[in-house]
Image (tube, rainbow, N blue to C red; front, side, top):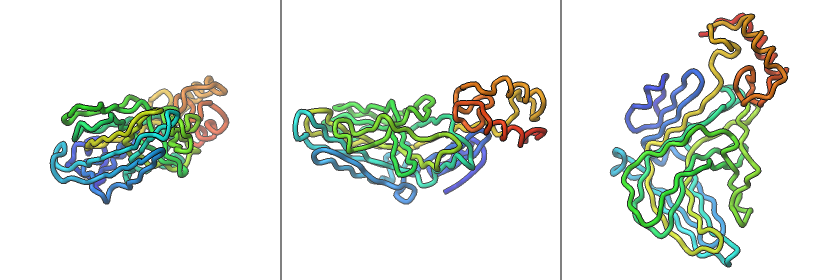
Length: 283
């Protein structure tokens, strides 16, 4: 894996790259080789199956990964069959406690369909935290019955509430809509990746789908590197303190203004962080 500083390393050749920058980090995977991914699957209902294969040609350009999905006809009209093909980038790990709270996430991939198949399927960003896998929404829909050449899909800004837990014990949905990852500084380490999903829907029929993916890009946005410099003049000083005190006790968008720990409230823990930075000159 190659590492570099600055957003420009995104333009490097197909390989795994982690690029740190002020206010965030970008993870990029263009090689799609087996050794850079941790691959798994989850399913429910009848006959869920998934295969994920590396191909060294035909990508955008060169290497890519081809994912095949299959589900059987549900047992009854009140059941569904689903399969999740899970792919985690081994290098894409972020620890909020030491690397900063996650304000938002942006996801991008290149995709195409390989065969028309019999079922449309979904592609979405993926997070694992504390042993729970979370799928981002809304997901990219790859329609049935059409061959799509390489295109780029990019999400807007995603926050923690845009991710829900994969839970195949919830037999009618396969998801727990009440569970979300913890993006705050108190949250555990997170690993990022992507998921492909095939779903019959309630009372549907057996389906197959096959698609390809390349050039996965995951951008993690964290609070600004110069914590406490609320007026942007390059030093944490008295004017910043006045701004902070005006916000103290208020509920704000997590990670904005004086909410340095991204818990949604400007409070005593934020004050402690601010005072520890008072007088500092920004790098």
